[in-house]
Image (tube, helix red, strand yellow):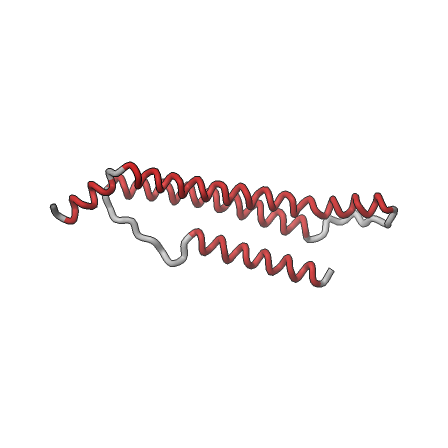
Length: 130
């Protein structure tokens, strides 16, 4: 059996397609979690204002940075979801064509981790100086 035949028979294995689909679904869950957490962060400022109003404190009507951090997380979740769908389509196309799968050093996982770390760092700095 030649190398090409091994690649083609491996690509025809449905477990490989199922693995690609499980990866896509994991990324969809990650994107949804980012969007949900972003919504909570964006609304946290509103919660704090309501809490202050219930105590009788003077309430400022500005949204603060929680809105912007929340929007950033929601947009990151959308970005991750779209890129994961694109990656899935590319993977299935390569499997259908019988070409070997290659992985880049700067993958979606690495980019998402770096952006989340930067947003988290910005949130920590914001909380430290509040």
